[in-house]
Amino acid sequence: MEIIKNNIETLMMEENYIQKEKYSDNQLNYFYNNWYFLNKHEEKLKDTKGLSLETILYSKYYWFSRFTDRFHVVYGFDAGVEQQQFMIVEEIDQKLENVDWNFVESLHHGKEQLKLYGILKNL
Image 1 (tube, rainbow, N blue to C red):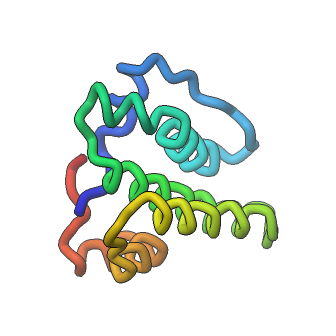
Image 2 (cartoon, rainbow, N blue to C red):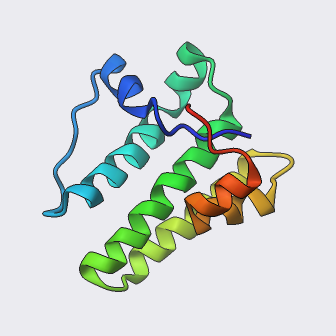
């Protein structure tokens, strides 16, 4: 299993994605834009870049988890953000036949656990 991490900016440029500046915090915008791009371009990335649905969905969850963590630091708890994160988990469950829940949990808990899991790659 892989996540789209290091080459996401290249994918965005290839798709002429225009970054959104929704928040005053640059890191929050970065996480948001990575998730939003994957969310809005899911089908095109599958069709033209050959990315698997599994990779895209897990990557969406990874980036939204980073967004959620940063959002809590900058603005505090927000039930709507938490609900959106849960909706991504539901989407993964609905669209994938065999969900690796240990992997999903590792995505939620960040980079160190991903390294232990052996799946943080230069994608």
